[in-house]
Image (tube, one colour):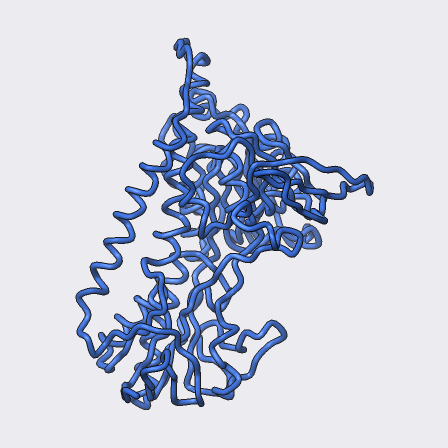
Length: 464
């Protein structure tokens, strides 16, 4: 048995783990990075990068079909599914390789392969051949897709985000379970690439939208391209030839069924913590087996262990995982050296969905009970100048501030809102008022003028 001693043991070599290891080293700690594989980060390998490559192909196809709006005649758009997926994998592999290159540069005594499990609060067993004794540890084991019970036992006919991008060709038809960011992105992209696509979700909204006006608008927009079944529970799936037959119950209790070539389970990615032996480390665990932890220091209750990234299920988004990794790595090094821990303020919440129109959610969530304490500004992109020029005149935005005018957050459904939401996130983080953010230059004609319109709505209400 190989015996290893270190200041900081980092379990997981994804976005959070890599950042934690680098931060611990920079802080002067001897850090060991333990990787079970496959490497390359969830984002680069099976998440945001390959999905955006699929979306890019779908957007090109959709743009060609819609060219008639601008007086352009594109007689026929033919989608070569194999070519689409071949390019996706080539580019995806480039992103993964860039991550792997950085890991390959690590010294041998700082990198270890195998599955880690806690033996006690200061010891890890890695595979069958190594034991690591640490002063502090960082759990950054990421997450994995889950397959709902009705789909279990259907074999390769069921896809997850870990397997979707490995298929050789686009399926003739696809059912998607889950209307969150991943589910709706893939659903719209597949539909635009010619796949007959249906999406199922037990809820009544898509893409993380919660404001009633935007929920209604979003459902109508996406239903124009895909078969949308909201408020529906898929009850069973069975093998039907080389495909799958699904049975579900509608809102009114009617049972329906339909055959699909493939099914994509996109209902969530729970953290990879079940096999870590967290109880052996004397950590205090919650109902779902996750350790209780401080959301600012990331220190778990009960031991010198920190948890970061998708593993803590707090904010499973890349920029948050990278920051949490840095915080966890620095604090792990501090624990090992007997120093006090840093507890930085959390960033404002910022989430995006790269559909067309895009969706973004910023800051404090919508709260129907907070109407008396908030002022909400509105804008419609249906008649916004730049949106109409680009032929993307759909959706709108709702932005809220407190009664003193300080911006709290908002939701967007519209063109290029990835940029507008960054501006709002910055303003919320800096504590700006709606009047202060409005009193900035807004070039004409831009989509940013839509943000100015919503801010002006808030200012007018406060002055009334």
